[in-house]
Structure formats: C-alpha cells, structure tokens
Length: 295
Image 1 (cartoon, rainbow, N blue to C red):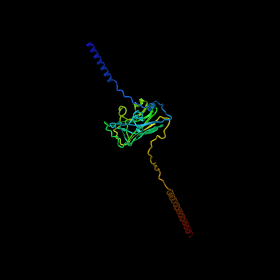
Image 2: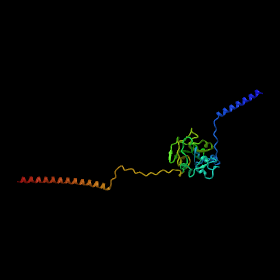
Image 3: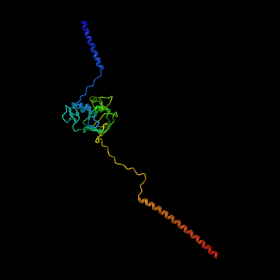
Image 4: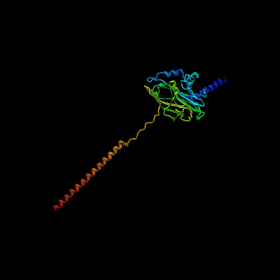
C-alpha cells in the first residue's frame, strides 16, 4: 500500500513538473482585441474603390496619466461605446477614463478617394503632462479606419507626418506601422507611435505636447480622386525676373539717333568746306599765273 502511494505521489510530481516546463516553454498568447458590431461589419465589407466613403479616426494613449482616445471599433470606449454617453467619443479621456479633457476639438476625416487628409486634436491647453520616458510616456498615436484590411496592398498610405504644436516630429521610419491587432480583426489601422511593439515601431522622441497633435497622410489606390482632400499651401508672391538687357526709353533712343545724325551732318559739312577752299585756291593760282604770263 505504501509502495502504491509513493508511486502515485511520484507520478503526480512528474506530471506537475512536466506541466510547469510546458508552461515555461509555451509563448504568451496575446489577449484577443474586442470589436464592436459595426467594426465586424466593416471588416467583412468588400473594398469599394469606385465610390468610397471611409472614415479615419484620431487615436491616442499616454501611460501614467492614462489619457486616451480608443480605436473607433472598441465596443466599450469607441465610437458607439457602451460605457460612453452620446458624443463623449469626440474628446480625450484622462485619469483612466474617470474624467474628460474639456475644451478640446477632435478632427476626424472622411475619405472619399485619393488625396491628403488630416486628423488630430487641438485645444489641449497644457492638459497632457510632458513625457518623462518612464512613468509618463506617449505609447500610442495612430489612425483607426473602417477600411477593411483587404485593402493592404491595394491602397497606399504615404507622406505620413506627425505634427505636435505646429512642428513636425521626425519619425523613426518613413512608413507607419500597420497595427497587427486591428489587421487580425479585419480592419486597417496604422500607428505612428506604438511602444507596445518596440521591434516594429517605437516612440520617435519624448513628446512635450502643449496644445495640439496632428497626423497628416496621403491615400492613393482608389479609382477616383477626392477634390476636397488637399491641404492648403501658403501662397507666395510672384517674383519678376530682371530683364537681361537694360530697358531704354524712346527718348533715349531718339536722342541717340539725333546725335549720330548731327555727327554725320557736321562731318559732311566740314568735307564740303575743305573741297570748296581747295577749288578756290586752285582757281586763284591759275588766274595769277595767266596774268603774269601776259605781262
């Protein structure tokens, strides 16, 4: 009986050790990302290249202060979030969602074809603390869309810019990071900052945000252009190139012509006078010679 008990205990210990080793070897599995009904519907929809009308939403997260705006498809805190009152999605939450930042203006974009678009937030008025790179840091700056992930390879998102308080921030990569979690849901999202995937895309710098964050990007690959999706460029005053030859007035030209004509006339008159004098001298000489010969 004692031998059987010892064998049973040994067997249990062996199994426990095996399970512990297996747990240590197995990779951690990321928790599945939730998606709203509208998000699932958008993910299954066929990509519309001819008459598109998609939406791009500004997304943000700062750890420490826990200021954020979640992806639009988040069922709890997204566009139609069950934990939000009507219209609350158009602001930033802070203190882990217990408060909102008043006075901010969120700008999202409607994508109706090829063009350049902009999303972001203004009016923060110093409400977001500066990053310290440790306890407080910007972890996510991104654009979530209702474009199905099947668009990857067909649509191109280029010329992506991150602008903080009116100044462009240098990004560590010329192309944004295509969010793998959103892609798994069937939706397209690109991140400019994502410290949760440091091997793919990290924060470009310690961000000190005072009043605004803006993301600019250009979309191509649709069969139509959006004439309204053009960012205004500053108008420069036209500059006139100087003429290669100095301009001369009609008076100067006429004056030059008159002077030349006068010179020619004076020269001709002088020549005529000399000839006349020579002729007179010759005639006078001949007359004097004839008169002397007659004497």
